[in-house]
Image (cartoon, rainbow, N blue to C red; front, top):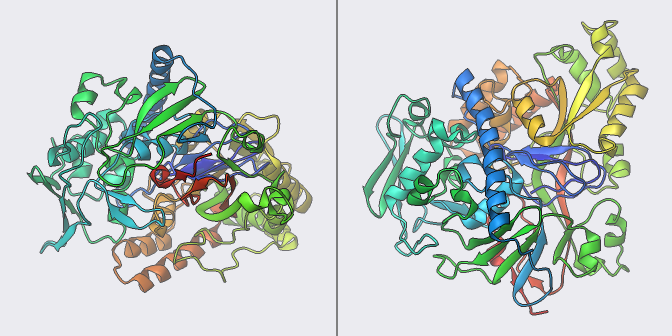
Length: 601
């Protein structure tokens, strides 16, 4: 899943993990102060912060054990990341090169939390994991399903008991970076390792729970996942509980990526500091606090990368570095957007803008006062002028969001107006609510990830609107990102600001994952029988047009009940050096670096 968080003055995003909290992508908005969560959470800084989460299966019943495993996985990922980075710093103290020499692509990103696919829940980690590892399937730059370790998209068999079996044939030239061939038992072992409760993956239930026997295995009631069968070295079958149009998309997420069993078992704690993956790039260096280097894997089974290396800085990435010729691609925020848009500007010819599959929002805990009252939630939603936020605060760098399904998905409804901006009706709703005149309206707190001097221009603007239009003095609390996501998942916040980037282009990854009453990613603790019925029907609906109708109906239920206040959809705004070829800003977290070329500088 892909959670994305914005930062005090800028946010950069790329989902959904997990990606079912991670989520994903290069979005930069100066002064936004909101986090994006489609998958996980990164430290909030002035450069970027992103947490992505992916979808959880609604039919899974949530348990205390599940919640504890998720919390432990965050701690495990953080501890492992620090140990990995420290080991790299001690082993390779030389800083990452910065010069514009050779066939090296130079980028700036935030530091990954971990490179273990099972524990990947943040954009900062996922953007590297998808380049170093791979699974049976992947996503193309235009977000189409493509084979990776598999020779082709799988054969499908509908079984008499209503289950569906996918048969995958592996490529015979797919190799680990140490030259060992990838076999079917590597795939099975890796998926079961990621789903093993002792691994503490927070995303495994979301992405693997549809497979027959996966829930029993994750709960310690089985020794293997019965729905994964190794037929021979080159053939593996995966059986899911019912026809689900989105299931193959889930196999593009890191929880299905193949890892080297021998490496993991020989060094369970630190193996991911130098992982033996199957992707287009190998990790060559990881220097604590400085950066990392990815080197092209020349024997990659698809097309090898066009560049020799990717040199990544763990700081900066802004326009100044770009203009100093220190990076080849940079994000454009609100401070520089007018210059980049100006046809007479030196930047204009190098400027690109592209919609992301992401949304930013205010969330309410619907089980805590005063937000267990629908009228209170709707009043606060109705008192926010989204157009002013989009056009004035953010200088039209992103579009206002009236629904929750982003443009780019077939289910996006451009005519849906959502809850209108109406201060008078908002005040009337609040005054007639069950909490009118009580202390509950005097002690509202919105928690945001970050540690800046101010929580960001967007949040401050919303705080002012609530004061002006409703007479509410709302407190804004900042919490360091790692603690923020842990406490959010425990339901400790009354209200929160966040963002979500989809892990794959299907509304299930947003509508079902984040709002079904049984979903572990349902941070607003939202309960709606009507919503549950709609998304449960959409899960198994094979008619594309009917699926769209179901998700649009579900969107209306959610927006009208206001467990979220959608604010704006994400957009990537960047400048790209003229000698960079083949790069299109990704709309989600996908492997894309191998497509980028350099016309020698």
